[in-house]
Length: 118
Length: 111
Image (tube, rainbow over all chains, first blue to last red; front, side):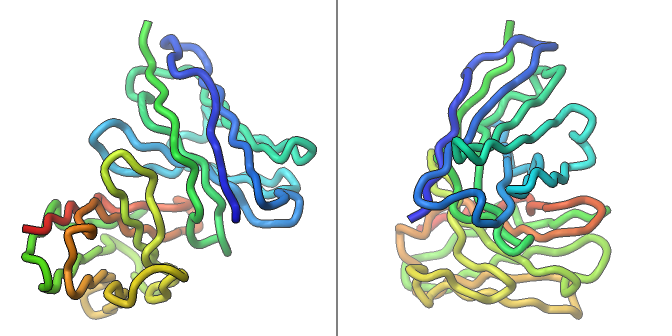
């Protein structure tokens, strides 16, 4: 059974870089699939941030592309998100998920709330 | 670029049927698969329909999905409504230029 778990600071200062890691258990990232990040501002809808393949190939939401870097560490079975120059608008619950057949996301991690505030 | 627009909310009594629409603003709804996710309060989304009309194992057959090219929309139908179905539902599709796009979300209330 594949499980994902997000980890990282819950509070980030404006203009700094948000960094999160997703640890995958029950499946080896090296075996395949894309792996993605999605976020949800409080009380709002879902927004895809970007996805990465185990080889390191990435694709990003065009609206966030200039600030996003997603990387993978197959030795730790983890992939990570960095979002630079954050503002209050980046406050959200951040989810990681497996990206299946370039179509859908399943399963999802439980999510982690990141607040941008000084 | 395109958007996926859903009704803000729908409500119905237990045992009844609700249908949630997901209308694509431009481009064909049939050009890429549509998925549907259920999100209960305080929880992560889970998949109830993938690839337009496929149900993951464990999802009851009360949930069904369809595509209507004439209205350029997808629909999620929940029959035999139960109180446990009360949640937010999001459609999602893909576009080569935009990546993954989620719908605006619909709150389902079981009266």
